[in-house]
Image (cartoon, rainbow, N blue to C red; front, side, top):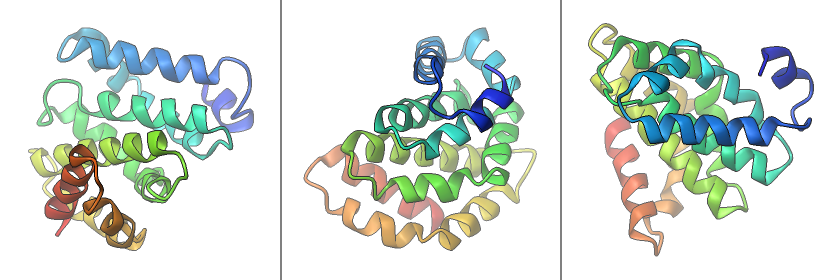
Length: 171
């Protein structure tokens, strides 16, 4: 899964399967070696180009894989903070905020979960106290409050709760 493949052929064969594998490897590992190895390899940054694919299914799996690839057990781990910084610097916050308006509920909910994970790491980062401010600035510039407002009143309490959590974490 090279960065060349991700940037030049977003919807080429194997991209969705690769994102799905990252999701299951990172999520199933919670705090063990594989998820941290994925984070150290910079997999979160490599998922970013897939978030802008025209295929909803690819967007869904890339967004779903992002949250466990960022928070792999301990939000205070410097590796997690480095991954979040890479996602923020790579335009990930802007893209995730844009995905909150996706017509696909799956894409919306996974983008929301990824933003919650990014906020969690940014607020807990011990080696980089400016990370939370950077995430908040990028989210504000991306129109996060406007995108979150309709989700705060969602009928699904998990969606509404996550939207309120982000709003509280960023304000």
